[in-house]
Amino acid sequence: MGLEALLTLAILALVLGLLVFSRAPPDAVLVGGVTLLLLGGVIDTHDALHGMANEGVVTIAVLFVVAAGLRETGAMDALSGRMLGRPKTLSGAQARLLFPVGLLSAFMNNTPLVAMMMPVVSDWARRLKFSPSKLLLPLSYASILGGACTLVGTSTNLIVNGWLIEETGRASLGMFEIGKVGLPIAFMGAAYILIGARWLLPARDRVLDPGEDPRQYTVEVLVDEDGPLVNKTIEAAGLRHLSGLYLVEIEREQQVLAAVSPNVALKGGDRLVFVGVVASVVDLQKIRGLSLAGDQVYKLDTPRNNRLLVEAVVSNSSPLVNQTIREGRFRTHYKAVVLAVGRNGERLEGKIGDIRLRAGDTLLIEARAGFALEQRDSRDFYLVSDVVGTRPPSHDRAGVSLAILAGMVALVATGSLSMLKASMLAAGLMFITGCCRASVARAAVDWQVLVVIAASLGLGKGIQRSGLDVVMADGLVAAVGSSPTMALAAVFTVTAVLAGVVTAKAAAVLLLPVALGLSQTIGVDFMPFVIAIMVAASTTVATPIGYPTNLMVMGPGGYRFSDYMRFGGPLTVLIGVMSVLLIPVFWPF
Image (cartoon, rainbow, N blue to C red; front, top):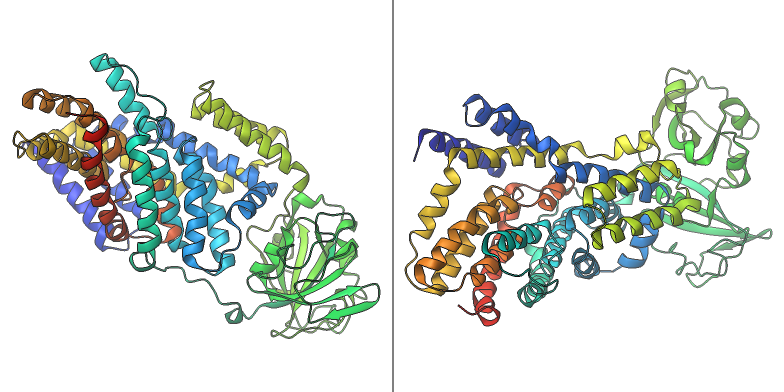
């Protein structure tokens, strides 16, 4: 082993050790590893930075913008509501997630799918009061297992197929040919996730119990005349099980319906009174067919999609003290509308405009962007802060954003455009049609995810440049005798190990020539080894480094390196065993 290979091995061990045993941010650890390789002369500046210009990394960044357009128009909430529903148990939630995501990923590249589903699943987990860490890694695994069932489900399969055609002159694999092995593995993987996730996945970022949040608000909403909720029951409208929000009463034609049954049908003009925490009020704002604060909201000059929710605490020197909101001419004076008032968790009686304010009351306000900055030094309020993620959805553009998404998928599926070109076109159309504004797009890009993936590619370059990849592969393959089955198991193992340490694509490309030589040495057909490499590389689940979707959920899910080994390690062994048993059945030696 050369000096560069030894240095690279030491740096790789350090990086893996920090990822496994420390709480250091993964982006900082990986960037530090690339820096050491650069300073040690193993890689040059181009190798260190090439990940930032990688087509896959740029594609993920652009897809964050596409996802923001879907989220800003409420289209993503509508899609996820129909697809995910409101399961009662964690296993039910995981099942509702696994099967649709697996099906979609068979026909749509799994990286953009996970990029668009991550914020939806995180919000869904919070509403269901499940830890996001119990659902985000299953999301990644479902996309990986589904993508392994078709030739176009993952770019790794396409890379292996292209190498097969170019280097051996064999015909291309069929669209669903890999599914002979991929489909049984996907069903086995789904069963493993449903059974094992409860014990093997951590429960981190515990969801806040509504009773633990002191900011309890009383908020009123109106059912829109001729809106989509008219004639729907409370249950069917999705207002029965809102996390952290309780429907107190309905005011209808001067009558008050208290202790509301879930079977009561809504009518246009109904005034619904809720009590709950601020995060749940934000969820209420996103439901199509409900209007917060009644007609007062629509008297504001600022367009609705340019407003935010703001929390402000009334000071003892405020002119609002001892006045009702209406008497204080709040809308006229502050160019904003009070949606709800919180007072030590009390239920405040009467309409919002008739509540007499006290010092210390917390107001939930809908105002133009910049309101918090303007009022931060005002003596009227003790504290003013924006509530994150509260811009009202532009429901009228939901159909447009969905059409853009459908067009993007169609262009990629038919081969008319690459994933990068189609996603850039979709992101541009999101801007042009008003589905997403530039400021929202900039905030939507998760830079930690991009840096982690780009740095991982730089680390992979170092392993290739130093020759460490060849040393690792040759050492494992040299231990194989003349048994085709043992050789197949060895190729799968080496591919899986390299894919977990480097990247799936790099592992596949490195092992294909090694496997070709091995098959010729022992005198058997090459195809079983091609399929083994394809399956092992495209189902990398035991580490966060090997596959982009695993890296993408690492931060939002609060995962550590050891979580992937504990949950994905046994699954990798099961996939390997099934592959070694099934591949020779369909592709004999």
